[in-house]
Length: 111
Image 1 (cartoon, rainbow, N blue to C red):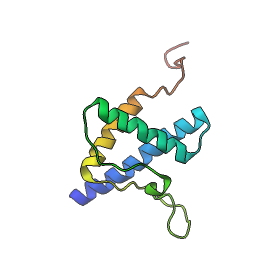
Image 2: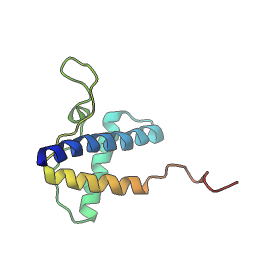
Image 3: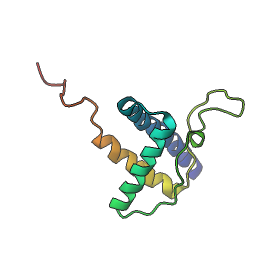
Image 4: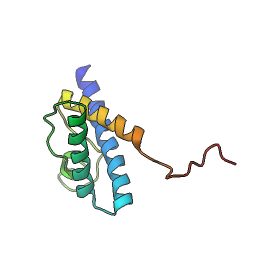
């Protein structure tokens, strides 16, 4: 059961980081590598603000396993230690909660 849960977590982490990185790319016009680097800096600041220690290494595109050894695209996967995965998941949840998806003007409920 632990392996199944951890496997699902690895997929969720990769997809969440890619979504946040894509948002940074669209907002700031940077590449994926720079967006992941910025996200990692935000993650470390978030850990510090919440007094959480994590041994997570810096995120890079190769850590997301976007391609196999032959360069064929594959399903994103981010391998982490179990505890680090929990911390990153909490960071992602907080980041998505603070993400302004609609800009300054909300389109729902206004007619």
